[in-house]
Amino acid sequence: MDIKSKINTKNTPKHVAVIMDGNGRWAKKKGMARVFGHKNGVKAVRETIEAAAEINIKVLTLYAFSTENWNRPKKEIDVLMSLLVTSLKDELKRLQKNNIKLECIGNIDNLPKKAHKELLEVVEKTKDNTHLTLILALSYGSREEIVNAIKKISKKVVNKELLTEEIDEKIINNHLYTFTLPDVDFLIRTSGEQRISNFLLWQIAYAELYFTNTLWPDFRKEHFFEAILDYQNRERRFGKTSEQLQDRNEQTEK
Image (cartoon, rainbow, N blue to C red; front, side, top):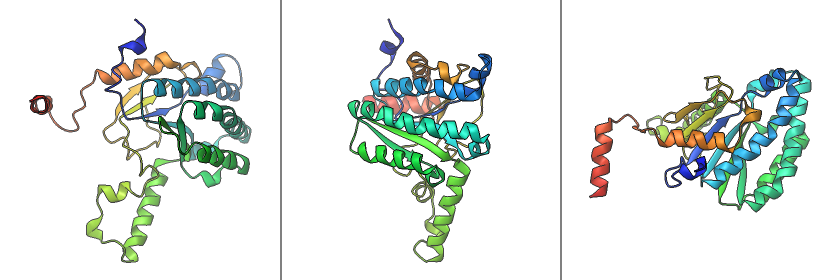
């Protein structure tokens, strides 16, 4: 029995987020420059998207480029931006064929003009697709996102469009990049590192976390399916006790 067949497709997380880590170390192990790892990470991206689509996950967010990544060497940034453009062009047909919608979060105005233009074109061409929503977090930082949300809310308070007493979790959520998306149910990070790295800090409040030692360029569908199986064997309590969940399930069954 293959691992995919073990997955209960009626109990998959609605929103999976992935921190794609380990490209540089993968390349270093092979005696190559870091950019070699980024280029070989493209296949892992493709397989992860296909795997998510195959088991009916509705939202997949990939941490492609953080606000902190702008501090990397210019040559590496240039390669990453070039890869973004070529990958978007190469993947458009596959996105259309598989009914996948592309969206992006982050300060994308900081992207080079060519990358920015290509990104918006693919977003526009896939906007009516419905099977899976693929989110690319580009030039993204969660703290920056939250600061921007606070600024927007503060401006509404100053302009008397909003009362301080009306500010709650829903109001804050509605001013984030992800306001149209469900919260993250499951966060995967590759490469063995066990950090969140300023990624979707608000949205992962109750997410299950999964860390794998697999370096990103080696990550394949079976690794994704293994992670989902691990998720399905967990009990998500959201602050409640196991007994409360059991009582609720019994009531539902009645």
